[in-house]
Image (cartoon, rainbow, N blue to C red; front, side, top):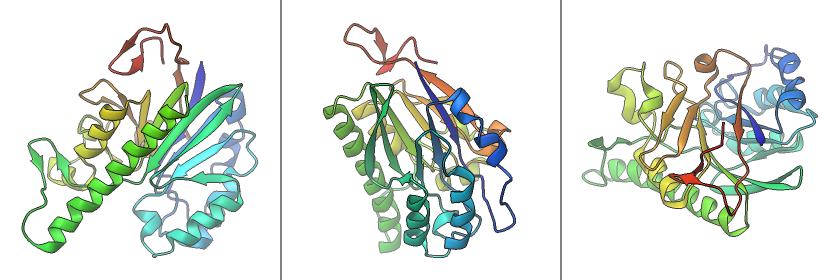
Length: 256
């Protein structure tokens, strides 16, 4: 069994040093990896990223992250990524990484993702150039997620996790105003997960949303925005895939 700790939308500022560190220092006792689902900073500055790095450095478990819209706000996303990388945080954008957890290859594919909406209520590549680019950007994020998940499959990962900031399904947005759903996620992310297969999908961004959801293909989705889970991190348990395992919708039935 692989234990996944996850949280998003911690929104740390320059006055946040030490706020989460006591809780994070307990992670090694309850989880094998920590996933950070974006919006790690308030305004996306390198200085704020330094605070985040101090909270998660040297925890004794791998830390994997994607950035969120707040982390892009000051146009310092490159610097934010570099600061986190110096603290041994693996920051993904259209990439995957393979972790060796007790001899088990665990793959994480990550992208920030973007908006656009969900089936029946989504934007399309039509009309003004800015609208076309909005949807094309979301599609590029989703395609990079699918390619990354495919790559993890080819590498023989026993567990594959999709890590995003924006939501792949409307289920986990329940509680948010429906009018803003198109700005909280895109069905294209869920399509990528269903096409390639994943054992768990983790996202943030929707502070008023709901923790549990599922794609139409049966991939379990968890909204780990800190205001939703109400604690420093949530822990999920995933069964290790074996050749004989019974699966439903690409997910091991024994998981979580």
